[in-house]
Length: 552
Image 1 (cartoon, rainbow, N blue to C red):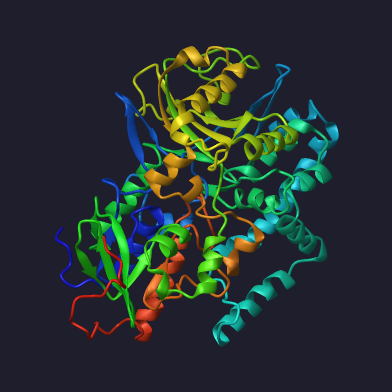
Image 2 (cartoon, rainbow, N blue to C red):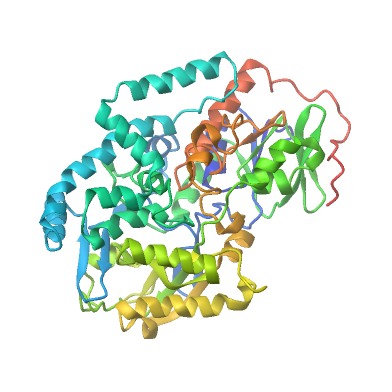
């Protein structure tokens, strides 16, 4: 496909939200061009070979939050997307040789939990019902554009609409909403349960990609954020995309091209070109300037406003807010090739079993998670890190040679900023060894089973995927960075403080994870502006677009 002679929309960043946005815009009849810095589209949701014969999801690694409406609208299943549910949700091997399994069915989970606490087993149904009651309300909000504080009449009525949703809740549900938005996950779980392993199993979701103690205020919302999703119509379920996470973005790219979207790879944007009328196009690293009626950024807000736009264009107070935007998930990501399955002390054997197909969480208590956080704050790395391992080849044999496997290791906490002038390039191999040793404490054969490994330190995640500070969510999911305050109060409607410039990445509502919703929601606002005439007219100035003084 040849690039369009005249382009309505330029999208910077070919990750899943950029591709989603492109599909919806093209369906509305707009000419769309996507510019991706890397040689492959997909952003952090890609599948790559990291050792001969071994392929895996490079950064993102599991599916639940991908919105079913996006799946339907973009015909992802027709393009080959298939998601296999985990037989159980999680497996926690414990230091004393015991274990806890969560999922499969409520009855099965209750039976597992009852080994540790009969009271906790009895309370489980009410806990699940509480989460689902609140999640039901918030699911609807994820599909909508947040009202802008200080906006016009439309924003006022949108705020009223949201308020009416919460007014319909009974008092108990309103109290639950308050708890989940303001409390720590630790305090919430301590109020519900007494068993340390159960609290760890649930509390892990509160620190995924979140550089925080599970007792930090606001972490309860991060826990809730991870229960929004569904797989194959089943709520709260997680699964594996056959072919890895890249199969999602490959399907999106196929649909985008079918709708006439032109996708440029190896096209690094170094500047958003802005003049008195607003964004007029972009400048690439190779010096080319591409013009369009508007520009849509699928990148971290810090990357957009601090690196791709000249400072004089932006208000000083706004820039100060962006500089303070919290980005640091303390994530250390690693893929490993395995000659055999892990042989866990708690559940011995290398023959495939359901615990191998689950999320394997090596963090036995909230106290363990909290100490990992304190270690990272003090020393840069956790002395006893939190490790979640998934082995997708147990359900998808296309990822590894017969009889062998690939494993995803999602590890916390590893601070983006190291003490004593250290650089992540200096210690990444040592950190990887430490992670391998942590897993080997639970599965003694693991270290010797490793054939090869692909390491992504926080610095690697930033360099390779534009995840500033290694933040997988493009910004912390804290109360001051959610909904109408994401990314900055007054700009929650996907419109940047520069005319003709929009945002569609995870740094906008509803936040991180492979959801497709920021891209979908942003497209709706852009289409609205085209229909209103705000963007419909061609640029009257036919001279070369000014880049605001930035040189490549």
